[in-house]
Structures are given as C-alpha cells and as structure tokens.
Image (cartoon, rainbow, N blue to C red):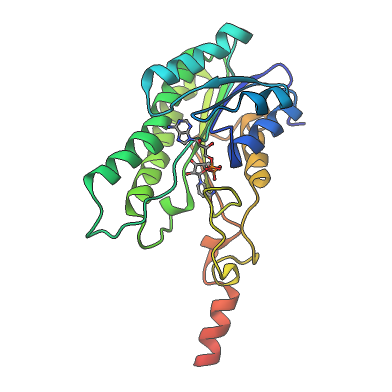
Length: 248
Ligand SMILES: NC(=O)c1ccc[n+]([C@@H]2O[C@H](COP(=O)([O-])OP(=O)(O)OC[C@H]3O[C@@H](n4cnc5c(N)ncnc54)[C@H](O)[C@@H]3O)[C@@H](O)[C@H]2O)c1
C-alpha cells in the first residue's frame, strides 16, 4: 500500500522543512528522489541516499534543467512535489509595494507554473504533481495579502492542470498547510485560539499527505486542494467560543 517502488520523484525546497521531510518520506516509500533547493543541500541528499540538483524555482531554465536531471539520471519522472517557497512579506494593503507582489508572484507562483509544465512534458503514461498552496489561500490573516493572493492563484492553477493533464494520466493536486513547524512557520503565542488541536502541524504530517497523493492509491484524486489545517477552517475554535460564551 502506498508503495513508490519504481517511481522517480523531484522534490523542490528539499533543503528544509516540509520539502526535506517529504524527500525522506518518499525515499522510505521506495522512490528514487532528486532533491532540489536554492540552498546547497548536497550533503543532506547524500546522507539520505538521494540525488541533489541546485535550482532556483523562479527561473525557467533552472527548473527545466532540474526536471531533465531526473530523466538523465533515472530515465523517467513520475512525481513532482512542488514545495519550494518564500514566506509572506508582512505589509498592509495600503503599504504593500509592487516589488513585494512581484517577488511573491515570481517565486511562489511561477515556481508552480514552471514546475508543473516542465514535469508534465517529461511524464510518460502516469504522473502525480503536488503543488503547495497555503491555508492563507482559503482563510487569510491580515497583513499577508500578496502571499495569500498568489497561493489562491496556485489553487486555481492546480484545477487547470488537472483538467488539461488528466487525459495524459497526470494528476495535479495541491496541499494548503496551516502553520507548520519549519523555519518559515512561526508558532504564534495562542495556538489554542486558532487551532482546534491546540498545536501547529509537523512537517512530517505534510509529507504523509504528499506521499498519499503521489501514490497510485490516490489514482482518482485529481484537481483537489487538501486543506491540511487540523480543523481550523471547520469553524470557531472551542477556546474562542468559551471566551464569547463567558462574556455573554
Ligand atoms: N511552514 C508553514 O507554516 C507553511 C504554511 C503554509 C504553506 N507553506 C508552504 O509550504 C512550502 C514549504 O514551506 P516550509 O515551511 O517547508 O519552508 P522552509 O523555509 O522550511 O523551506 C522552503 C525551502 O524553499 C527554498 N527556496 C526558497 N526560495 C527558493 C527558490 N527561489 N528556488 C528554490 N528553492 C527556494 C528555501 O531555500 C527552503 O529550503 C512553501 O511553499 C510554503 O509557502 C508553509
């Protein structure tokens, strides 16, 4: 079940956080993995038994070279975990600059466009592409408009990918994590007021979802964005309800 034996995966953002946990998880499931990041993670890849290719996901040529590396080394590409990204720039609607929007767009959105396109061109018969959006695409926080907007665009891009690539046997899905314990995710002071499970997510919990979506067991899952938020979008948190009820 959920075996990835015989499959080849490219994982972007693999030097850290969710990307690193995903590379580890896919390797454990039997996949051959090309780990990639802007940062040099050749040592980490060697330690895990993966290949490393440096890549700037905001640069078209760099992403093309990354996907081609999988073909050159392993003669196939079956899975893309499109994870690399930068954190939100914290600015109000009134203060946010065009540069801040452009940076979010170039890294957090064009990475998904280039990755999906260059991977799909090289996937034969079957493939699974997993894009990375964010809870901010569905239920945002004040001060992160540029990040929320491009993550919402990733959700839409994922649906288009599913429609156009489905007939080639390529499934395109996305994951929208809530705050996750990585250098990017900050825990905040009051998780009990924002998360029903009173904690933030662990990167391994996101990697487990990537694993499922990457596997043939998810063969009928296409065009979906899984909101991995521990229940945050289900409604008002019990701790908040208690405060409201007590003050009534
Ligand atoms: N951690 C969270 O709380 C959280 C919440 C929602 C969504 N996400 C999304 O999950 C994904 C992974 O985030 P994470 O928490 O693991 O972050 P992280 O900071 O731990 O890792 C991100 C990795 O992306 C790499 N990267 C940045 N710019 C790059 C570029 N131009 N080219 C190649 N690599 C680049 C970084 O070097 C880093 O290794 C991101 O897309 C992020 O937006 C994270």
